[in-house]
Image (tube, rainbow, N blue to C red; front, side, top):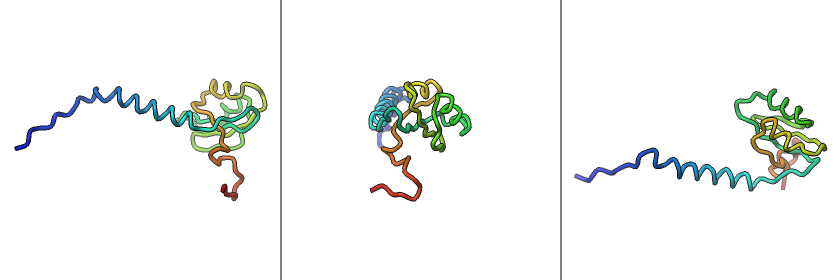
Length: 111
């Protein structure tokens, strides 16, 4: 009869799990293209917010909403400090949507 295998306690996986989650989050955050002032910016908001709440937050930050999707608003403002105001309004993550093809006109394909 084989010897029983000892399984580690669930608490021993918390630190490695937290480190893995943090490193994945950082790599995604650092790998996303950043938006320049006056150009469109994609803002990711909390997933439990409604579409109206996300759009209202972007407008309250001084942006013109170009497109809205699930958890995401693409807005633009030429006013300085727009990204800081989006973060203050509740945005979790900001990035340049053109780097991911989110601002291409409908029916066009990127090479």
